[in-house]
Length: 318
Image 1 (cartoon, helix red, strand yellow):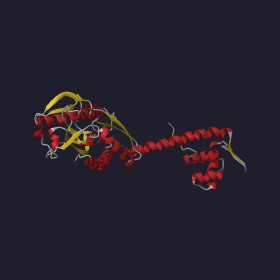
Image 2 (cartoon, one colour):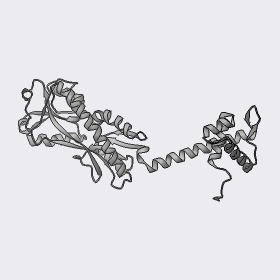
Image 3 (cartoon, one colour):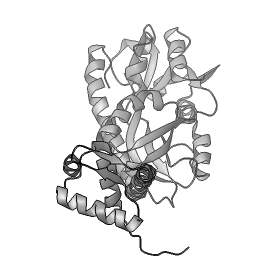
Image 4 (cartoon, helix red, strand yellow):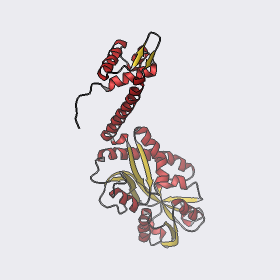
């Protein structure tokens, strides 16, 4: 391809489009923030370079010529492509000004995204996030294939070799029916006190199931045959008296209003899951994703503080 100098500039094309829109040289110059003589001189230079008269000029009006109409249409397309080029360059230079594909596990998304998404928009107004909800193994696979830029999940799961930035430590609480013996005291519940209790857990594939199962096996509790597909279902089963469960703090503000539950803290050291934003080690967006994780952390802490006061009014101490 031969790269010879062009006889016209993008600025001259902007002048052409401005005159066509305003049909007046003075108003077009004001629109472009230049003097009228400068704009007129640049248009004359452009017409000479092209060998075509773009506008008919008279004291009463400015009209495009027949040939000028075609050139104006092409000028608009060129300017549009130039704008697209600048936008693309901006996004390449600042990953937080484009679109990111971020996975999120089901035991986090309904409880964290309502607070996190608005905070991200406020902090990074040029960023668009496509949230993809799925279980941890699927999200890790999609990360490896390059189908996701990052994922929000629990580090206690098997996630392989991924870089991460911690967002929050989400502590576990004992959830029982209101009439359960464990609900009779406000004191923290030791895991040993759960011995021989019947516990309800999530279905296979949920990383939260395996984290909870490890805690329950340590305590010697018995898992019931029913396995819930969501925390909401789990809570409804507990409220009905079918058994007890362990809930992450993140879910409690939402789920405690859906059923008659008693929520009790677990004695020191309280167990927790570590929520983190993870990404491929070779990702060029490491710095940007660390910044995004900080925004998520701030959103989590703000929401936790708001929910703490609301739950205290309901007799739930987090």
